[in-house]
View 1 (cartoon, rainbow, N blue to C red):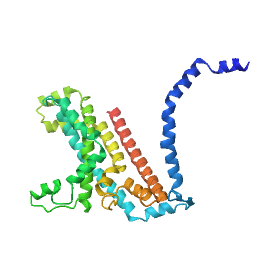
View 2 (view 1 turned 135 degrees about the vertical axis):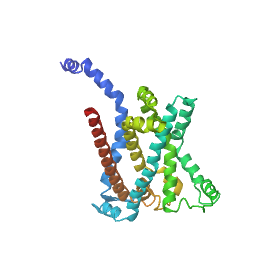
View 3 (view 1 turned 180 degrees about the vertical axis):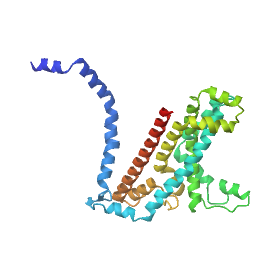
View 4 (view 1 turned 135 degrees about the horizontal axis):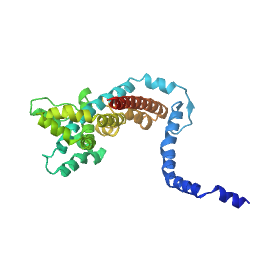
Length: 305
């Protein structure tokens, strides 16, 4: 009777469901081990003092007090947002212009140019940071300083001064992501009816007017997506400042992820590093909520229209 009851429970539909769960289980297992558990453990660790070797000691909110009383932490937050803005705005403007050019019938070898534009995205981040480290070398023979010398401008200490550090890192971010965003904008432009452009040409609209009055309004969802992904990416910026500035991570260029990495793996202060990670998590959640709110409002306004 037990065997028959088991057969009644294990129906064909349930067998199919169990097989499906078995196929997708590796993802959830890996996510639980390498994603969910580290997040929960990081939240737990933010209330303890731990150097990675000795026993943990509970300190309550002391780790949060330490980072909020640390001027470098607020410099890291400010640097992260400044570098994000410097890297994101040019991406959007140049990305839309490049996508418009690649979508134009006047451009030959479009597939070749699209591949070339996308190549920086698949290039190693470390290689990009090393190359740009040579470009923005502090010495007069650095490429950036050599170009400035042609205009009789004194050499710039790119890795030591407040704004040059941010401009150099933002340039790396721009160079790596502009091709990716161009492809996204290109996909959005290909969904715009060509009749709109043809009607605009008949009315005598210039290329600039076509971009401003047709392309940009129709690309609003894609622009919001690019802004959202670029914002999240800038908040997670780590490799570029680390390779460019070295383990010293000067206050002029340290980012939030670099700050928590320094606390954890240079200073062996895993508690304060976890506290910084929790603050970063809530910043990302807040910006995500704002992005979703703006997206939903734009979607509702389109339905009303």
